[in-house]
Image (cartoon, rainbow, N blue to C red; front, top):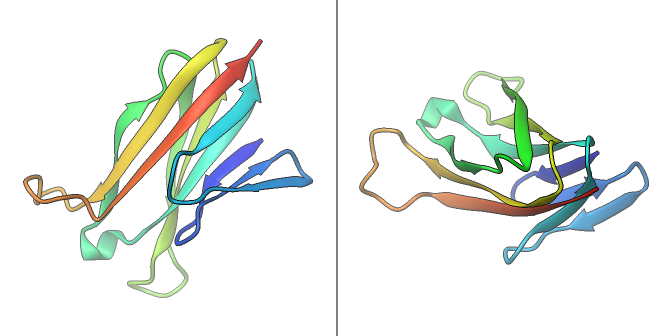
Length: 120
């Protein structure tokens, strides 16, 4: 399983023992056909900021779950998690922006991009 995300420093966990840290630059994750991976990003919907998916990696990756886990206290940031499955060999990109839905003409507060390479 690969896990990408966790603000402010983005991290990916590959397997149970290997950790790969993502900086602010290019992010690349490699996985095998049929394996699952998760992208987890901090989100605080009470402020209006939500992650919007611009590219979901189809057809190489398939989105299988999309859930938000709220913080413990009211108004506290939580974690938004998207689970993907490697559906076919090839390369794909997953892109998201953090933005208030009503502020479409302003620059996003944050951008996230992950290139995924699926091996047979």
